[in-house]
Amino acid sequence: MVSDFFFPQSGGIESHIYQLSSKLIDRGHKVIIITHAYKGRTGVRYLTNGLKIYHVPFFVIYRETTFPTVFSFFPIFRNIVIREQIEIVHGHASLSSFCGEAILHARTMGLRTVFTDHSLFGFADAASILTNKLLKFTLSDVDHAICVSHTCKENTVLRASLDPLMVSVIPNAVVAENFRPLSYNSRGLDQVPTSPAEQRPPPTSIGPDDTITIVVISRLFYNKGTDLLVAAIPRILALNPNTRFIIAGSGPKAIDLEQMLERNVLQDKVEMLGSVRHEEVRDVMVRGHIYLHPSLTEAFGTVIVEAASCGLYVVCTRVGGIPEVLPQHMTTFAKPEEDDLVVATNKAIAALRSNKVRTDRFHDQVKMMYSWRDVAERTERVYQGITGDISPEEFYGYYPGQGWEASGDRVRSFALIDRLKRYYGCGVWAGKLFCLCVVIDFLIYVFLEMWFPRANIDIARSWPKKPPAGKTRASTAARNSR
Image (cartoon, rainbow, N blue to C red):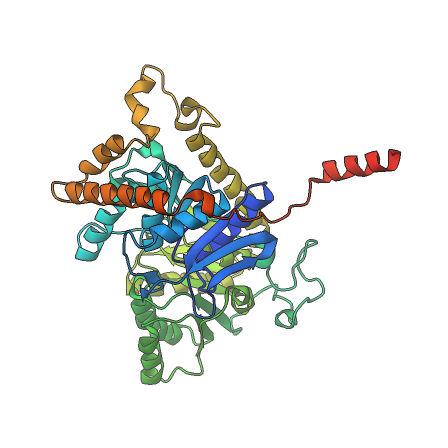
């Protein structure tokens, strides 16, 4: 797994990589993660379940993204891949420099590659145009792509000019046990509290004078709808006096929220917690009744699944892949506009006060809908498809009357001439530049193979694994018989 975004930074991509890697290890695979060095974290680290992390020291330019150098990452990447005997390189996130460079280098080394897209991008502004062109460069030679929603798939197919059959949709998931409502255990609600945050039982009903708490947990950036939040909060509080907000998160828009609170004298109605760690998110969520998610663009929105799992009623904008995430009875949708967001929040407050919503059932329903084990199984099938463990007809699908040979290019060749043909079609000037990059990358690889041969690289020992339970019992029985 390769990405610029990983722990200790918190976020949906970081959690996705960690949970997917852990479940793949449980299924018998060896998984390592390559990311850049964070403050206080360099070199090699180990996490739970023997998950090894390589924190590579590279210069970070913006929002934990490393400076793109194209070629300087290759020697370190090659050394890690050979040391760990890697067969598949799986990159995450369009804006990750490490991801794009690792996929290029992996293909040069003859490794199979997979890319997972977690974001949506437009087609009009300069930043999106540049990002889309770089994504086209990254995915021109990738074996398969994964998107977290069908909306994300449509966006990625258009941005990178991909064959839709080469893109699978595998959603995010949550660890439902880590996002329980107040006083919830396997037997249901109203059990013995297990933490200080659970000292009060959840109210069975909300009266007209009871205080309703609205929770917002998000990075405070423009694309997360912070400007909408700044405009909507005073109006929501004016229409609903018995309402308060809890806002957790950090970012450049935090100053706008603080100025709004001072301007409207709402410090006693809005509590700002700043940045919170992922393991603290549940303790913040269970303090509320409604989760407000005013994002302007979102490929999936894992946080709204976490909120629903905690028993919160969700108010969110109808953008991107969000409408695909939760069933209608758990959410109230709004247009990404100030007026509509205020109306939707008022409707949610009224629904809770009239006890029309059974939020106590949300946790068990979310637990049935989303599972990281299911995500790992579906991702494993993608790996089997690109490595030939299952036939191309079974993996990509065969339609009667359509010859398979017409789609033979879906099985990517490692031959340099075939790779250059794929890159050359990326644009009049960009295609030639991309081909030049591929040729230079190949020459660097030849140089590294000659001057730093593989025989001089020590093979790392794999983390010891417990044998399956069946084998353990069999070996114990055999030992006892002897």
